[in-house]
Image 1 (cartoon, rainbow, N blue to C red):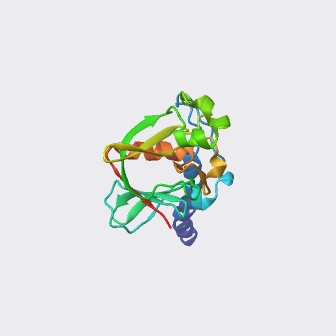
Image 2 (image 1 turned 135 degrees about the vertical axis):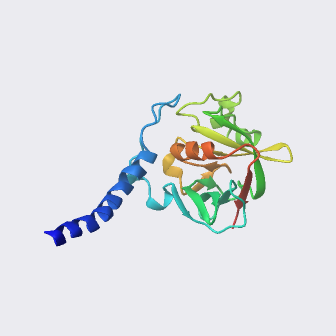
Image 3 (image 1 turned 180 degrees about the horizontal axis):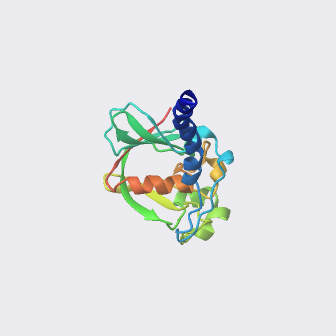
Length: 204
C-alpha cells in the first residue's frame, strides 16, 4: 500500500503538468468580450504550433524591451532579457515592401483608424481610394485590434506592427510592408511595449 501511494504521488505532478499546458495555451487565444469590438476565440488546431505565442530561449545583444522582427523566419521576438524572449508568429511584407534596420515606437493605438498610404492608393486605387479619408477601427479594419507605429528621427516610417482580420496570413509574406500579428498576440505585445522602445527589423 505504501509503495502504491508513493507511485501515485510521484506520477501526479507529471500528470498535472501535462494537463495544464493545453488549457493555458487555449486561454491565450480565448474570447475577449471586454474589447470595444469583442474578439472570438481562435481554435488552437487552426494555429500551427510554431506560430503560437510562447516564451523561448533567445540569445541576443539587444536589451530587454527590444522588439526584433526576423523577417525571413516570419517571427517577432520581444526580448525579455537573461536569454529569454516572447516569440510570436507574424506575417511580413512582400519582396520590395519591407522595412529593414532599426526604428523606434513613435506611438501606439487601440483599434486604430486605417488610412492607406499614397503609394497604396496609386498601386490599387479601386480598392484603396475609397478609404483615403480613413477607415474607423473595428473587426473589418486591416490594422486589427492594436497598432504600433514605427518612427525614425521623428518621422513616421509608415510601417506598423498591427493586428489583422486575416489570421490565415500569419507566417506568410503578403502584406504591404507592415508586420501583422493575430489580434490576440498584438494585444499581448501592445501591453508589453513602451513608446520610444527600440525595434530591429532583420532581412535576409
